Image 1 (cartoon, rainbow, N blue to C red):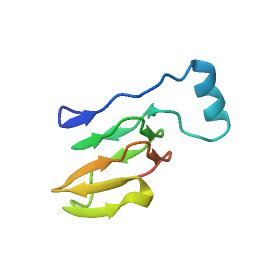
Image 2 (tube, helix red, strand yellow):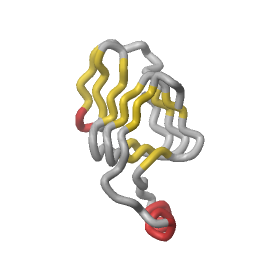
Image 3 (tube, rainbow, N blue to C red):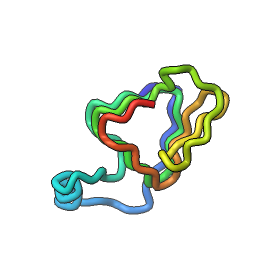
Image 4 (cartoon, one colour):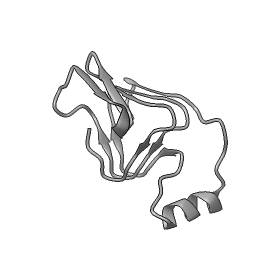
Length: 92
């Protein structure tokens, strides 16, 4: 993440064994996965962002409504919704 990113916290804690179980089942734990790149983004609380994701608004979109995909874009800033799941390898 860079200095232009804001991340809210989480309402609960997942233990290492809970995280390992989620990953083994192909699910995404709360937080940000390894090798993920994020720029100019607001991440709401309890969001789950998988590994190897790229959230940089690569197309320079100014406005977008994608709540089913877990995000909006407002004035070029990506907003990851509360409790959203962004799967491994997603590019926004």
